[in-house]
Every structure is written in structure tokens, then in C-alpha cells.
Amino acid sequence: MMGAMLQNSFTIAPRGWQARELQNSTKMGRMNNRRCFIYCQGGGNVTKVDKFSTVLSERSVLINSSGHGAAVMDSSSSSLVLSPNGKSPGELAVKELVPYGGGSLVQVEEGIGIVKFLRGKAFLVTGATGFLAKVLIEKLLRTIPDVGKIYVLIKAKDKEAAVKRLRNEILNAEIFKCLQQMYGKSYEAFMLSKLVPVVGNICESDLGLDEDSTNKIAEDVDIIINSAANTNFHERYDAAIDINTRGPGRVMALGKKCKKLKLFLQVSTAYVNGQRQGRIMERPFRTGESIARESFMSGNSPSSPPILDVKEEISLALNSGEDLEDPKVAQRMKELGLERARKYGWQDTYVFTKAMGEMLLESMRGDVPVVILRPSVIESTYNDPFPGWIEGNRMMDPIVTYYGKGQLSSFLVDPIAVIDVVPVDMVVNAMLAAMAKHGIDRKPEINVYQVASSVKNPLVYGYLGDLLYEHFTRLPWLDSNGMPIKVEKFKYFSTMEGFSSHIWKEALHQIGSMPISNGKSLSGDKLEKLCRKAVEQAKYLASMYQPYCFYGGRFDSSSTESLMKAMSEEERRIFHFDVGSIDWQDYISNVHIHGLRRHVMKGRGLSF
Image (cartoon, rainbow, N blue to C red; front, side, top):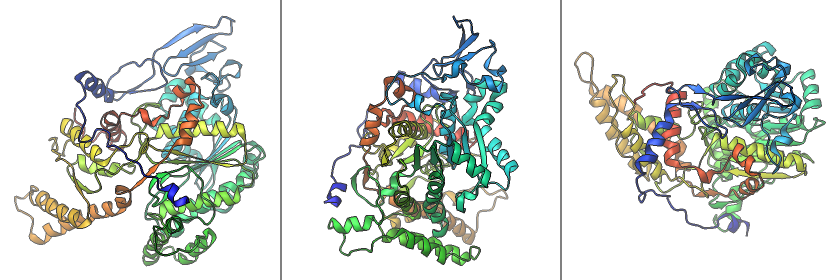
């Protein structure tokens, strides 16, 4: 019965791929201009500036009728900053950074009550120097600056090193530019008044915290957010289990010591659903569950797999990987992770160990309210605080980059399969809404939210390929000589053999026609060696992504939709996470690719 529920069949249209009309010239002109500047979002007007500079909207100075001083209205975020001394935000002392009267910079009508709940709350955030956590911290501090302390767990040898990492990796990150402009010279003072670096390690017992830090967190913290993870699909088994499975358990153990804890939020991934097919519902894992066993119970598997025992898997991983330095042991541990994952019905070590982390939380939590947030493929910001911010290559970005460079024109992928993408700012907004809802309710239960687009607004690989071709034909990247790189239409292969054969021919043609500085052509042996290397790299990328490029599951997001419906109109504007509103052509071409160019490639290969 359960297996049948998990495999509800339904049809997903490719949303315009092979049957879409060209956008009218007015809309295209608007979208093309969007790439020219960064602006801080929040619903107000935007001031256009030179390409790639960061601005805030014009501010208007109001006089507080009660005589308390000047009030600065930031129209880009509908925020009112009250200054008792009539100073500009850049001149405020740390104690003056909280708005006059203790109010939040953002006032919203009742709905869930997100701002009201989060005001004054203290947080512990793991994985704080990561992509998602930075966007979360920025959003919290920009929209709710009177939030309490945010303790950030940082792996460092001592407090001084932790503070250095905090400055270099968080305070200096470009995502915080809007806050920098809001607070001016007081920016660092404001940030350091809120962010508390804590030396620790999620892979150590008690998180590697000293006694003072443990006591302080136990006294202060209201909400714990565990976003630490090892996202390598093919990580060695012991390393992945240590962070993704045992890590959440260690954080929960600390959470149960927190006297004021109202909520534990675990950042997971929608792909913990493994090889489930059809419409996949938002429900928590129970200890001992496995995808392979579900498949057997529904009649789709001929043999009964053993019951998954998380503790036994932890013991197996730890006992098998004692020699950490031996390369043979390292390779064997990678193979062991894939072997165990596939035995129980998961694609790879990453999603398998994340699923076991959810199971461990379920068994340990007691009466602690838990939210499990399962985003799909997290990519660059859609709007907030500005479009296109990204850090590092995310899941689909190597393919985009290689294609734009003319190094990859085909892939092992089903063109009508869905690539489930969600912008990082929408994930963060859903997190904040879920925190407030369940932090207010404080019911001792687990609630799961899948933040995903594959049901409500699916993007198929074939349409993505068309968008990439159109974009790089219109705005090609430049080679080392400043010449535009010509791209071909994307080709799709259903077998590794066909893909490998095509890549070999393509590599032979490209490498064989490379200009040689001394006028001599490559020798046969050297040509073959270079071609073989190029083919192996492409095959490795294809084999790693293959389970996701032919994935048959679609992530239901009914609970996430209900969460959005519970929000007031103002909350939906400030904490927007409606994936149905995403225009994929606009997002991919005019937001995401330009974000890759600016923030990952640092402007290399730009053309205008």
C-alpha cells in the first residue's frame, strides 16, 4: 500500500520545450538589462547604475513627529531605521543599531508572525561558512536586525583563527554588500555584535566545544540550524557518515541541553528520497526504513533486502576505514559507500548518509520539535538580496560552464527528465517561515518541507539545453584571444557507450585542430593521450550525475504550499518562496549564468 502511494503516476508537461513562442521584444529588452547591475531587493524602487555595481535605493529622511529624531526610510526593503540622535546609519554606534523603541526594521501584518517570533531569538548555526547559511544569516540580519545572538560553529584551531574566518568568509562575502551599505562605517561593529564565532567541529564529540561555550549556548539558544554537510556524491563512507549521519546526532545531543530550545531545524536534501519514483510525499523517515524495502513491499523488487540498521552502518564505516592515509583504503571506502547506498535503494553515499542522519534525529529527538527542510538542487539567488549571487560551482554549473566554453556539447541525460532547481533565497525564506510556524506551535513532532520545483514548475533538461544554446549564441563567452566561442545545439545520449563515442570524436576534432606554437602538429601518441583524458573527465562527470539525469521522482511540496498560504500578504512579499513564479528563461539566462560569470568565474570570458 505504502509503495503504491509513493508511486502515484501523473504527467508533467515540458513547459514550452519544443512548443514555446518567442518572448516579445519589450520583455526581452527588460530581461537583458537585468544583468547590468546588482541591487538590493525588498519591494521598493531600484536605482539603475553602472554595470555590476551594488546600490541601495534612494533613502528619504523623515522627521519623527514625537521628536525622537530622524527616521531613515530604506525604500528598497520598506524598512524604517530610527536614529535617536538624528545621525545617518553609517554614524550610528553599536548600541544605536537596534531601531528606536526596540522595533524590527521590517514590520509586517499578522500571518504566521515570522518577524514577531524571530525577534530577539538566539541561534546556533552549523555549516555557517557555507553557501546556504550565508544567505540565511544575511536575510536574518537585514530584515530582523533586532534578532538575538547568532552563534556560528567554525572549525578553527583557536578563537583568534575563528574570528579571522568569520571576517574573511562571512563579513567580507559579497552577499553582505547590502548590509554594508545600510550600516556604512558601523557595518563590522553591527555584525560582530550579532555573530558569535564558536570554535568547534561537528565531527567531534560535544561538537569540540569548550565548557564555557557549551554552557553559554545551553543558556541562550532558542533555535538550532544544522546546515553542515559533506555534499560529495562519492565521498569515502566513513567521512560522509561522520558529518551527514553522526553530525546531526551530535548537534541534537547539544540541543537537548538547551534550556530555551524551541526548534531544531535540519537542512537535508529532497534526494534523500533515493530511488523512489512518481510523486514523492513530504514525510519523515522512520528508523530502519529503506527505499529498497519499500520497493519490495510494493512488488517492484524480487528479493527482500535486509532491514537497515543505522548503528551497524556507522560501525561498519568506522571499522573499515582505520587507515586514513592509505590511498587503497580511501578508494575502498568510496566503493563501500556506493555499495551500501545502492544496496538499500539510494543513488550515492551523500543522499544515503543524509537519510540516515534524518533517521538518527528521529530516534534521538525526544520531545524536541524538529523541522526537516529538504531543498532540491540549490542554485543562485532569484531576487534577494540581489539576483544571481552564488558561491562555488553548484550541481548543474559544471555542465553550464563546460558548455559555454565550448568544451561540452552533449551529455548522458534524458531530455524530458526534470532537473529540480530552486533558488537559494527561496530556500532561506521557507526556512524562516517554517521556523516561526513550528517555533510558535512548539509541538513535539517532526515536520518535513520539500522546497522543490519538479511538481509545480518543472524544468526539463531539453528546455535547459535550449536555453543554454540561445544564451551562449546571443552572448558568447570569449576565448583566451578575446574571440567569441561558438556553441552547438545540445545533444542528448541515453547510453554511456553512445556518449563516450561522441565525446571521443569531438575531442579528437577539437584537440587535433589546436594551433601549436612552433607550427608542428601533435604526435599521434600525445593526441590520443589528450583525447583520452578529455573523454575520461566527461565520463566521470556523466557517471556521477547519471542517477539524477534519468531521475523519475517528483517532489511533492503540499506542506510547503500550505506554509505559504498561512503567511500574510506582506510576509509573502518579504519571505517569498513561490517556485511557481519562476520564469526559467529569465532566471537561467539573465540571472544564473550572469551570476556564474560574476561570482564564480570572476568576470573571465565576459562578453557584452
